Length: 272
Image (tube, rainbow, N blue to C red; front, side, top):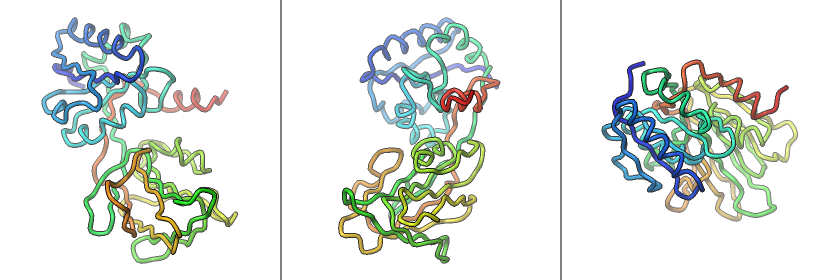
């Protein structure tokens, strides 16, 4: 890949020590002749990525997820420098920065295009999720009832605690906890996994890109909760049905050349 010339460094000031790591990263970049825009304001300014080649985020996967909209809008690859445990997205190690970062700055990186979900209320504005869209019961301890259609065809009616609609990137998050499959992050598919379904035969379903799903609430006593990447999906009250599909847009993730997704998976899942 081409060498980087101008980068942004975003540190999450709510995490102890993130500022120290961000300062070290800035020093390393300037030693390689790069221009650096450093901010500890989080969320960062909306135009931070307008004129940079890449952005390095110091925090965890959640911190990196907050940069998704800017990254997609400006098509700027995001690299995650973890602050704490090894993440599936924030894979660069602060302990190895002096060894790895000069090579990254000189072009020793790859940009992986991670598929996202597109979702919207009927007639509403389209929004995106990198991990998942979750529709859950609004009543504690009570089942909710949902109906899911693929285009105009009924997939199933569910009595459950909720449903997880997941990207391959998010397949190792809530989807996995709900019993869904682990999917290679290079796939362009969407998983639908019911949460604690009342029927034992209810299982995950994998849908290809190009199919739009519609999830409707069926006479639930309380309004179901809808979240995207762990945050409220809509600013206003939810109006069903909610549409969800594999987005035509993708998230540009910067990884070190030779990065192994399966090595991270083995470490996180403790597979021998």
